[in-house]
View 1 (cartoon, rainbow, N blue to C red):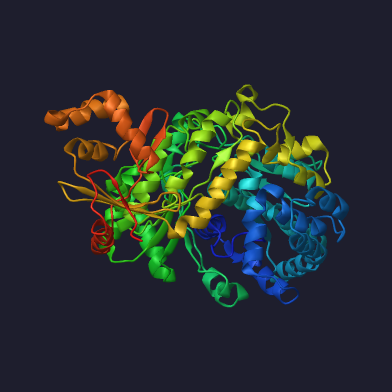
View 2: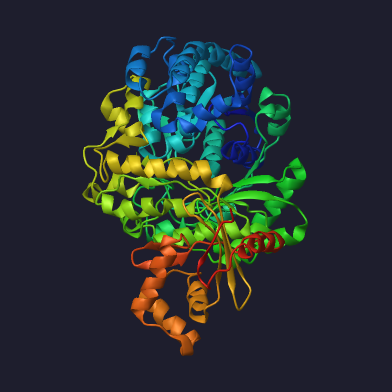
Length: 639
């Protein structure tokens, strides 16, 4: 049996498909007499479209990722799905006017008119390759491109078995795809390592399909049948490493090689150990199974090393929703000792210790996504995040100190939030400009399938409808769209536009001025030197020498309340103790100077330790000798 696995646009071009890499290996190793190849149609598209239009890597990224919640990438290929180059062009234009810039609108409509030709070309190549089965993966904005190719393949060669799977086919979504698009013979829902080989074996042996968990198939009368989903997730030992044969060679021959630096995709775990305890209210990840399971440290380490050696690529994207904390003392030390200069991106929890962050940095995990979505504790409680605003600030500070690049997003729109939750944060943002800003401006939360907000209307969202882009992309009744959609419209909750506008203005300034901003501290034992370069503060250097103030500052390495600081600092320097009112006055003065961040009655200092002490000393001495200053006082900039 010959199996062709197809990765359509808009799959990222800098990453091979993990799903298809795993399925290729599962077919080759677990289906007797079968072999699988991967067709990198996303890369083929970049070559095809750049021959016809002024299309760039930034354009591809827009349709693959940036426009996800507007559905632009899926609408582009709806013309091929419905074999109509003008498919719902008027509806798209009316809905998106004001949301898209004119140049982006023109390009999107031009792509929409053009891509049916590309889909026809891909389908003809698939048929010419002569596969028995063709499988399409569908994640994010791949759905219409995959469906369109499947439709055309079925028209050209009805004997070829068409299969779809991936995140867009989980649960009810997959059942809806199968019901509504008869040219898709089978849909694999959930984890495919067992179900897909099981399907191929059953097709070869002509045995019933009813026992394959999650599979959608058709009975003798052509009616769609959806088998019950698996009751348990795959054990870690059953999760195969991917086979990325062909991807890097195809990228090297593509115009896309000039756009991106390729990365490997590795997987150590599935599910979320935090989500098992507290499912974040807006998170729709891990639809089928939240249960956390991870590969053994030895297995994961060997997979990483094998992929690096095989493909001679050191940049890796770890797709785990959250880091298995065991890996900090097992996998990562071995990576540090391996001599490989790996550069990895991974998702972590924001309350990790500085020593743990240093281990990540030493192991090459220089890009981290710690799940920071707010800097206010009350809003974080509404999310059920399990961290405080000060802990998130500490993460940003310690990330800067340990050399980690912290990727995060600011979300709003949670039922129960108010302007009073945002005003104090907005006021303090100028003090934070030396720390990593969010990736973009704040965004109103999207209601995602599988999230608590979707599953539990009592949390604040009722009357959900599929987002508008599903309605101008698919020719389906709303009930079917509801089952197929992942993102839903809901009445706006939380803060209003004045607060959103003020927050985004502050975030925009943060992003604009971040490169030039600086705040560091250097602890010399009997004194602490702080150096600041931030546009909102006129002091440039400061020296703390008072023993009690030194104790308070060091305690503020971790979030503390005023009363806790008063008690602990007095224990450290009993001869210099101060009462709680005096400590509060000190904190208020440091807040005004932009040295600490305050939230929910707690404080944490925001000055990373200086990482280049020679430059720090030169910078400090230039200012400290310009004009004498009292201990704890700001030193003015020389004229």
